[in-house]
Image (cartoon, rainbow over all chains, first blue to last red):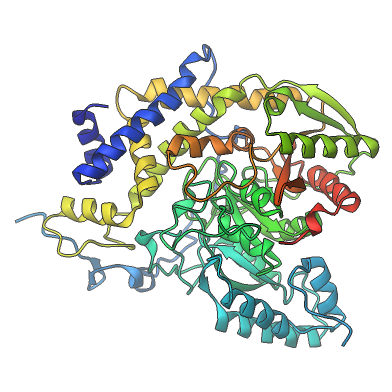
Length: 93
Length: 477
């Protein structure tokens, strides 16, 4: 877990940490990686990955509109909206 | 009036009292709301006082007209991970501290439709990530049996509320043990249904291939009553099982109960004694015990932390400070908005899991960690399927120790190991319940029963039989 990797993970996760939090997190991640590395001792050759515990299938439904998006109601909890649009800092000059 | 309001009454008893008009729904709601208001254990994040009283008045009017809905007028609490229309849903996170969902979760709507009254939203570990309720943004919850100790987690507020007589039953969610472990720590009953049996619609996602809603209550009979109104196919949840309404299967009188050697080795002495006594009682009742082996058990915790963290890092990417949730003040750029909103809104454990998941999903590690964990998941599930060729149910301890003290497990990986007995069934998607089976000193001990997929009826029937023969579930703090 070198500094470069921690930087990359923080960038990918859109998280920023101060130096003290970073040190603590780096130590924790080392321990977590040691914990999950135990898996490597298991022989999983030829075993298919299991994504759904019931090996379930995804049921299909008719391609029909069944829900109406109530923009005003759904945007009521948004931190910043104007004219039905979400506001973010300017990205294009 | 012959009926006396008692905080530790079961749902079943309260339902009879309501039907016989010994008590009104309004009196019941008031009684529990008062107890919650006086609670010092921090079991609740939000109290729904006005709504509960209004619902209770409606229930009384319906009872007066001979209304028959099964949960009519019965007060319950919801874990604060279920969306509730018009009532804030925080997930015990600063990120959602002011979030009000515009709709009810399927579980909330189903219970409401059956007549249940919502008392409030219970405390939990932040985004359901934890085994002690210590990661809540709204503060830790005290165990009703010993205020220095944790109630377990993540459904810690729900289990503690039922144990302390603040609600006769509560909803919870279980990803790796979050219903069963707190139920065991608090001396109450808790059921994690088969994955897909209870709709995840409106359940704020942590790890989607593992998350499952379920009930916490004072008896197995009450778990059954709650499950009946929580379960059901829901087309709004693409992983909802199609055939959940399995009829009562007619549980045979004599069951073969599997005792997995991996779970019974090196047990805490008090837990071992309680488990042994429970197994002996079940034998006396005509059931047979048989040793079994679940050889991949040791890989369950690592596989679980890879899969659940990977899914968490993906699910929690939706919190961006734009559409809902916490937003950083005066962001300098879009990246700054994302990054500061998330860094300010999430607590330390949530960040650890997001970064772990990001790591195991990133280029160069995906095959070694994520795919490896999914392969192990299949082997762990196969262990159970093989075992169920020979046994009807599996009996294990619910937790490695009784409730531990707050602050005892500061190191994340020692905390993760607390779920050693509950995680394997979660990975396999199996139904499992925890019921009280003894004490370690002054602290309750729970046993876990694991069944084949959709064998909830079998699990509940055996737990009901056990509770007819024992009084562990009747003890109160």
